[in-house]
Length: 277
Image (cartoon, rainbow, N blue to C red; front, side, top):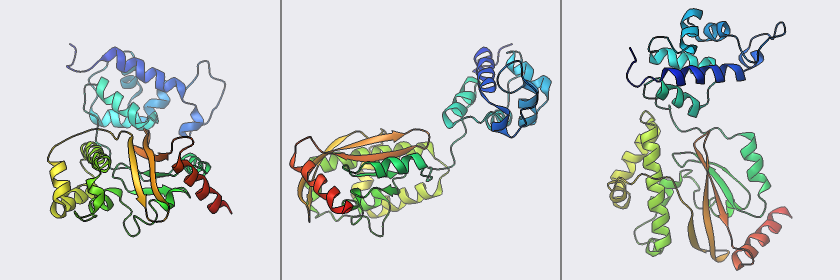
């Protein structure tokens, strides 16, 4: 009898594909003698996951019992599944994926190199909670001073007084609205994250503007917006604020893109010359 929600054939095919892509060295096993087929053996996966070989073989043959959440978690660890792959594994097994523990704050070497290589474009990296994780040299002119002592972009936005003239700018209001909608999406993805819950509770208590937006229950990922910034040192600037999502870490690379040949692009070029001299 088929178990509701369990797609046995798809689960079996997925397990086989993930097993055959792994090399023994990747999971701490010796390569040993030459193998007839690529990847790990079934008994090796069973050993890594702490289950019987017969049980695992039946899962790969599409005739095993409905695996428990503990079994699925053990298989995800044994097969070195990514977050997306783990979620897929749970869903084809008819289970809800376990919630992620919290937003990732780890900045990969690749992202650091990418930020440093963007010498003519301000860019910075935030996590799903909007904590500032890394800033390139040009972005320090925009977020370095503005968030001194407050490394969270959402807190910084709503820490501005209601009398601040920037609230009159429709682009600013749209930017803030989309940021809150993206934050709510993260709030749903990380129900167990204490820091995220505490920040939302805090802002609900101190910022009526945040409370009003939060009560609308908009859920959406950030989209690009045009920003017009009256910078105290650099003068009026206009650029597109692009948000590039980093799926494996659930982070956002935020980039300020000036139109080619625009006065803002010229300012960015002057800044680049200043920081490189």
